[in-house]
Structure formats: C-alpha cells, structure tokens
Length: 247
Image 1 (cartoon, rainbow, N blue to C red):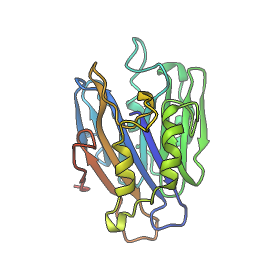
Image 2 (image 1 turned 135 degrees about the horizontal axis):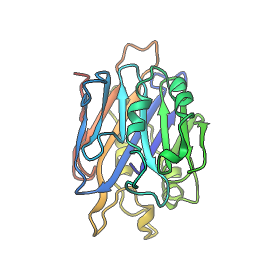
Image 3 (image 1 turned 90 degrees about the horizontal axis):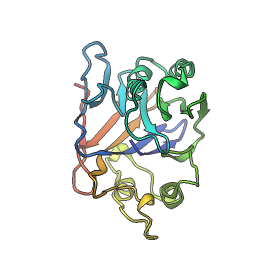
Image 4 (image 1 turned 180 degrees about the vertical axis):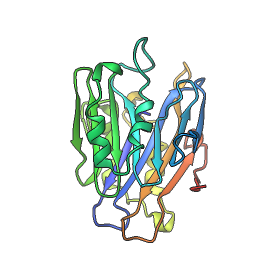
C-alpha cells in the first residue's frame, strides 16, 4: 500500500477517518477485505494470496492497521519475513496503544523496511523500520499523509502535492455518506506539475499501479455507531466504493 491519509479529531463523533490507495503489481493475486483467517475470526482485512498476509484491515475491537513499504524496498527479499504478517499481528490486539507497544519489540532485520500505521478511536501511531530499529511515533491531531517516507515528509513529491489539498478539502461526513472531497483527490493522476511520482492514482506501463482503495471511519466510544469500511476493488477513478458489512 502506497498512500494513507489520516484525519485525527479526538472528541468528535468520528475521531479517526482514513483513506488508502494500494499500489501493487497487477498480477499479484489478492482478495478484498473479509474474514479470511479462521484462526483470527475478528479480523476483516484484504488478503495477499501470495504471502498470506494483508495490507490493510480492521478488527472487531475498532483497531485499524496498514503496512507500507519504505523507499526502494518494493517486493519480497529472500530470508526476510513478509511485512503483510504485521497487519494481522497488530490486529490481534484490542487497543492501538498495546499493539504499537508489542510491535516496537520486533526484530527490524527480520523484515524489509516498512511504515506501519496502527490506530483506534483514542490513539494513532506510525512505526518506522529503517532496517536498524523499529521506532514508534504518535500521529498528531489533524490531517496527515504516510507514504514510503516519514509521516508528512515533504521530501515525498506526493506529500508536497496532496497534503495541503487534503488539509483544505471538506472532511468526510460518514453519517451522511459524504466522502466526495477525499474521493476526488484519491483519483488524481497528475497534480498539475507533470510529476508522475506525485500522483495519487498510479498507472505504469510495467503493470504497477493502484489496484484498490479503502475508506474507513471509526466512531467514538459513546457513539451508537459502527465503524465504516468502504472498499473499491479496483482503481477508484473507475471502480465504485461499496460498504463492507461486519458479517
């Protein structure tokens, strides 16, 4: 998964709202988010059929987790464990805080470098494995972007082009089913400066590109609401989002 947008607004009806475009080789097999793991029946997540892990998921306790590669580390490496396992391991926990604490003890050399987002309605963290250590950072209030570099890292052309746009766009209103501002940004292939690496929607001649997209909203603890999980099983400019029911 290549881009995650996070809106944290503690105390609001929807304290955490998230959008994600997953970029991958078109030929890598996967299945949409569902309860794919019999030994983990409380997890709904996308299934990477090649390695058995996931790129993004949500558990029944209201914890969401997503994994991203760091720059220059696309694909597997002999002798390294699959980074997709980490989404499932994070979602084994009932709180984001406990999940982040547990994942901080990972052996960084067991995996290729990664960014891991873990959040619930109270807390949000991004974990960076640079190959030497796994470091945990809180995600502040407001709108943020995570790509293959650090959180809100303006060295990323994508962050430079789109973080200000997401910050100024009308925030999603899950109660009304209105995600229009964020949906429009997720489908942009060119931010206007001709830099392909700054696009949010990727299409490359070698088959690498945006293969699916997700929208997630977590309600506050006192709200009589359920988490919202919308999924587009293809590029979001040509595939409709639909609601994933809890089952």
